[in-house]
Image 1 (cartoon, one colour):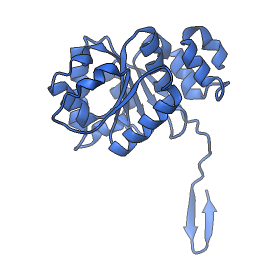
Image 2 (cartoon, rainbow, N blue to C red; image 1 turned 90 degrees about the vertical axis):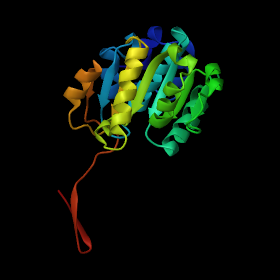
Image 3 (cartoon, one colour; image 1 turned 120 degrees about the vertical axis):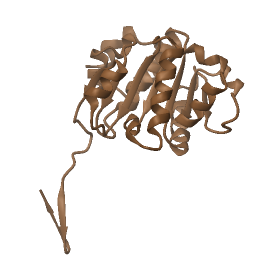
Image 4 (tube, one colour; image 1 turned 60 degrees about the vertical axis):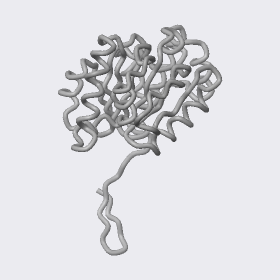
Length: 221
């Protein structure tokens, strides 16, 4: 599937941002589009690292921000990753949407976020924003959960599960939820819980080889 095949389904600014670098979609991106990415369907994307999952999230977020006039939240597990995604999104889309980073004070509702379209935050910070009744939460239309397999983590899992549950109830299931991960042990069960279409693909840009190092020689399997 080529980018031009969906030109009529994505906003002009998004198309113009993608066209210099993308001609043909990667396998997981094509599968996501066919399973409702651009029609506000919930998705769980389980594909290897560097296979193109982030672009799936970007297309959903930017389309909904521009077409539906809704906010988007991108949830990550670590502050370092939040900083990385914030810089990446601001560089790519900062000319026509407002991107914010919210990872700091857990005792603040951060009212300034009302002015932003795309908010990158950690799960702990979003939990704080919900508890402080941030008024702009009602304007959210898209939620991305990066590294969603951490729901199995004893530390972050319960917080993430509660966040997703609260957001769905708070926004009356009107949000588009997209979970991203390279390693999920029970993708079918998780996709059913999320009420999401499941995307599984093994394509990766660089082929992996398994080998055994013995002395000064590596034997590739």
